[in-house]
Length: 453
Image 1 (cartoon, helix red, strand yellow):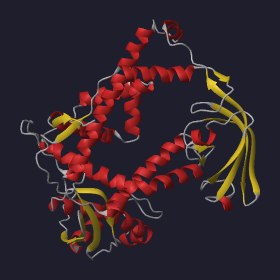
Image 2 (cartoon, helix red, strand yellow):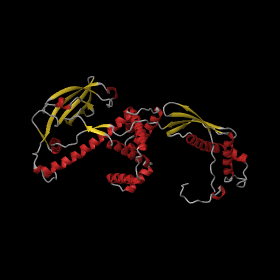
Image 3 (tube, helix red, strand yellow):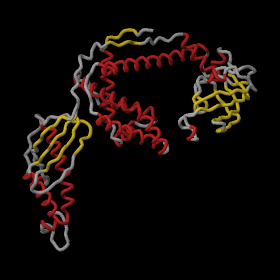
Image 4 (cartoon, helix red, strand yellow):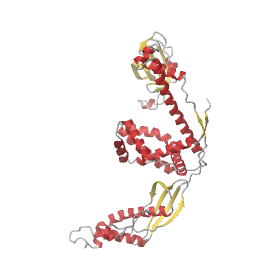
C-alpha cells in the first residue's frame, strides 16, 4: 500500500467473497545447465497439496449439480469419480504455476523466455515434484558507454551529387527510340532466344525484352549483361554458356550447364532531352535552378539519414565487440521461432501462398541464427545501459510515435493504438523506442571523428 494512502478497514474473506491464496513454500534445488540456464527441482509438501485438493473439492461441491443430490450435499467420493481427472489436471497446472513463481521470486531470479516444465503428476497425500528449466537474464559487464570512438562520414552535398541525380531522372523519363548501333549499358534490347542442354531444347522465347543492366536474364545468372550484349546490333546472332538456377522448372536440369542462343531483333536507347529550364518546367519545377535546389535538399536528407544509420551501426558493433557473455542456443531458437511465426503471419496477410511462405522462411532460416543471436545479445546490453543511465520512454513519446505511424499509414492514432494492443505489441514498441534513445544517448556522448575517405 502506498505510504500516503488512507488507512482502510481490512475485510475478511467472507466479506469480500474471495479466497486469498496461501503460500505453497516449495523447496527448490538449482542445477546450472550452462550460460544463463538453470534447472529448478521444485517440490510442494504433501500437506500443502492435500490442503489445496481439499479446497478445490469444497469449492466444487458447493457449486456442482449432480442428479439425485441437493447442491452442497454431493458425497466427496462421487465427485472424485466424476470430476477427479479434471480437478487433478487443472489443479496440477495451477499449483505448478504458483510454485514456479514462488521459486523465482524467492531466488530473486530475473527469468526470461519461456520456461520448460517436466512431467507434473498430482496425487492427494503426496508431494508435488517437478522440474522447470529456466533462462536467466545475463549479467552484462561493460565499461562506461560514454566517449566511445565513432567515425562520421561527410554529409556535404556536392554539385556532382546533384548532376548525377538529374542525369538519372533524365534517363528514367527519356523516351526510347531505335538506334543503328551496337547495344550499350542502359539500352533496351528485343531478341529471340533458346535455352538448350544436353542437345535438348528446354525453352524458346520470341520478342523477349531486356534492359542491359545487372546480372540476370529472366532468372538465370549472367556475368555482366552489358558484356554479353554489348556491341550486338539488330540481326546479330550469338550464343553463350550459363548455369541453370536451382529453381529451374525442369528439376533434372537444375544447376546444370546450358547454352543460350540469341538473335537480336532491335536495340533501343533513351532519347535524352536537353537539360534546361523548359525540361525542368515539364516536370513541375519552376526552372532548372529550382530543380537543383529540390534535389540538393533531398540528397542532403538522404545523406544525413545514411550518416545516422552508419553511426548507429558502429555503436551496435562496438557494444557487441566489447561485451563478453553467452546465451543458451535453445533460447535463441525460441526467439527465432517467434520471428518465423511473425513472418508467416505477415506474409499470409499479404496473400502469399503456403508454398511461397515455406520457401521464403527456409531461405531466411539459413542466415537468421547469427542475426538473432547478435540482436538478442544487443537487446540485453542496451537494457543494461538504459537502466544504468536511467533512460526511459514517456507516454507522451509513445503517443508521438503512434501519431507518426498513423500519419504514415493514413490512419488515426486511436486506430493504430487499438491495432497494436490487439496484436499485443505495445511493450515491444516501448522497448524499441528505449533502445533507440539509448543508442542516441551513446552517440551524443561519443568521441566522434571524421571518417577516412
